[in-house]
Image (cartoon, rainbow, N blue to C red; front, side, top):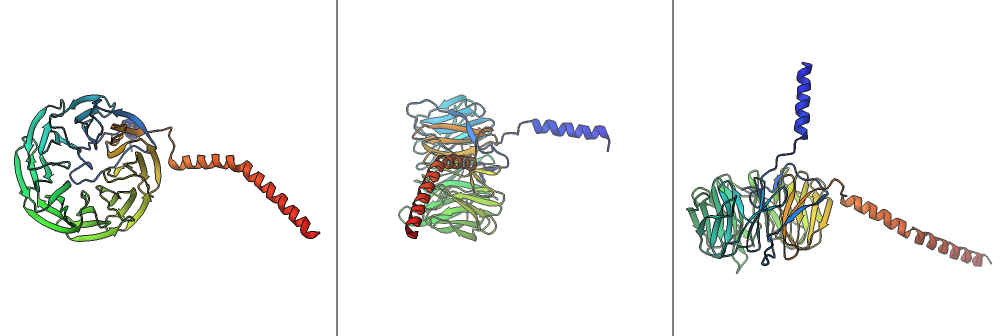
Length: 423
């Protein structure tokens, strides 16, 4: 091979390796219409705080799940929507609708930002200014975040028992589907279907429902034991955590049960799963984290954080690390291969996680220390195992004099008793 050609290839490789990784978009809850909740490259543990942003409004006491699009982070925060620069955390704008906004995450695409506000309004805002573009009036309160797919927005009105599809550019109704039970949680869109959960608050009846994404006609429904988590798509399967303390996989095409695996807790896995490496990553409400084999449902590992509540926080897979935060204010980094904890940090408040663009991990905090947080890799930080090793070493040095002293005393007593025995 020509030497000049080889040198040219080496130079191109070196230059490309020196360039920063292209930041990815995370434009809705769990990243995409399938709710995979993962990116192939992400910040490696340990992490450090890169920036924190807040609208500074006195009414602000919460910030929800952030989303990232074209270098900007958006989140519901206090009475409105906050937009900040993803690199620096500098505020770009803050928009506060008169109706206030619900405690849900926005969704965003090239046409705008979409967020439920007030009792029954879906609002579209301009990405660059936060100005209102259009609004859609639904029947009843909108309690869950919308999903955007191919220029359409899918969302549900729980009180109105109605599921909607509207045009993202105009806000015009494409179709609506009236349900006999209350639709809730965030829908997924895959293989021409939109899949969501319904429930009856007066009983244990609940269904996983699939509608045709083009027409709104029902394709199938599956009876569940109580309500379930928001679904996620893994190849040809839809994964949900159910109230009967199991994680289940159904065929996307027809709702046929593929596998069901129990979790190690009596409280359901209510947060949306994340999908990576052909497997499902799940968190239950009390801080147990799991990896399930996507093909068989076999539990690959289980880690217990034993702190707070995680029903409003979703696993985020960034490269080979799963990040998640909870109600006790801790943020965790878990190795996806082994299930071992790599890193944790106390932030305070109640954490809504999260999102990543491959460079930083973003999450919202409410009640205390509220705001949008961005964490990045800390080259000088330490992992949990290193902290434990250092702590163990320090502890050993601290107790060594006591051990020596006790040993000497016990040895003296033994010597005295031996002499008395021989007398």
